[in-house]
Length: 395
Image (tube, rainbow, N blue to C red):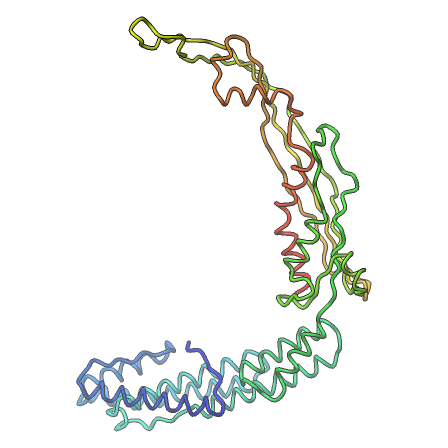
């Protein structure tokens, strides 16, 4: 199906000139005995366009002449009747359906103009004016619908009005004051959303030490506000603030977003111990000829390994505090798993390689990462989904 550009004023003149230019070029192309072919946009029109192409190749073909006459008339009647039926319906998609029928008729007209031999058997008619009339009618319909919705003065109606005025401009660009009303309806639908600090309720596990704990929920709170667009958001009809910014700027919240860790469960397996022998060939000196002398040294690593899993659940709620209702809420879950190992050794330390030494130096491990690492990694995994859900709620 061909797209339907908005044609009004100068654009209409440009389109007519374009069609004329295409027609002239096509006539010249045909005059040079080229194999010009036309294709139907509707399956039902394929027999017609097949007959058209046959007639262009063989102008004296009597069957092709008769087929073009009858099939052209049938196609015109079918598309005109379909357009008339759609006009009597209430489906809002009827405008596009009507335009599609007229576009098919316009393609038939263009093909006839581009091949003069067809004019001996059909009387083509342009449907550009009918297409423009449909666009005008569609624009008027959505303009009235938008105004009716705008009068309702609720956020939902303002959003619907904004969509209606957008369709108005899609059918006829610059229709009345639709662009101004589109901006006004959008502004009426905008809500001030305050994202509160992410709470944890001290849900920290006591099995791990706190090594430089630097988990900052404020960082994720500020990141949410920033990535959602902040006070200049234009992706969704909302402006976003942290609770601190809202207090400082005296912003009255329409909606609030509360995010809270519901629980963080840490589970560790029983330690698994095993030993493995290691050896290396090392240089211990040189012989009388100055050549290196090597010796094999041995050691035994005694490894302790443990597997850890942390399950985290993050609860979020988007509330409309003006109308005292819940907009959206949900529970996000994620988990982390890792192995932690350390080792001691007996024997000659020179047998150990770099990886062995890493295990030995890890013998003072508390089995697992710090709380900071756990919370940051869980939040990083949940954050994209959390941001998407808040954005969807606001849209």
